[in-house]
Image 1: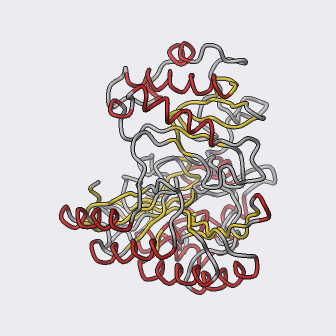
Image 2: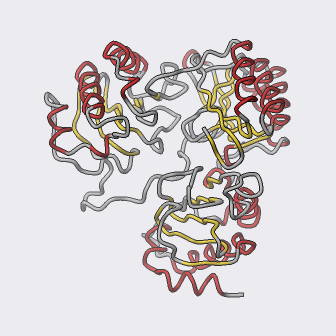
Length: 437
């Protein structure tokens, strides 16, 4: 797909897991044919940037040569630890497989838009709550799933609870209803009446309501930019472990990935899985080797601590890497993380975007900093396209965030999260804080 820094290629390994030496080969291809930047997305896809039409074809040939089989068709997302995670309420693998088969047999993939997706969340250690889906199925018990549509865990309206077979049929019916809307159709375009008709047979059907609405009917703060799943060692079935590390703002250069893969091989890794939340899962090491690999990852600049403020910040490349960028988004994000550290409000999700397209985080965040012709725009509780609450010079964006952090610390009430406090203070107070020396 075209972006401000050339073509971008997105890769979803069919097996979910890539051997370290194969991932080294992919990183070398990224350096040869792109700009050498490798990303892992919020959904857990691998992205390679800075390609041309010619170099993208060469990259595709090398992906085939490396033997990386990639997924195609309608994405049906599960945790990368699905079926091996002792924390799961229910194993999502059989239901996800049944949905994929049903989609293929019905021939729906060519008739649905490229962004239509399904999420099957077994509620394990790798959170899928921040992932958007046209249909979301969340485990609520053995063989029981709560179905919601058009959103992430916090925003998708809930339809009802289903057994596995009924959940598969309801999902297929909703996808058929989207097909009827045309290639641009999405679940958000379906009327409540159409969704109810498509899901008849639910054990507990009810009118649409936010899935996580509070007891008073209010909607909680929109889901964080990244999920709240742990960083570090994760226990698996059969006494195995996986080591989860995060990429700073979802990105690293090819040489860093190569060095990390070599260290993972030395640590006894059998494979590496790209995972939601812009993370990588190293499979196969024992605990001692995982601890040593964590030290190496930290020295390479990767995120190895759950307290690292970079986990809560989404940022695109920005200027000058992207021609659309008005500010150097990742530099601003890095400055904010370095300057504020653990002082960054833990209830605040932050998005730094080089322009109003908001590629790194299309959904709302507690606070979004956007580059535009006037400098840096601050948007509260919205997306990069949202109504500005305040402005500052582009070079002052990180310092302005520091001023807002101090304001939050002074003004936030004990029962408030960051979003509620910022909304209460209002645009005028935020603008005054940003104007302070």
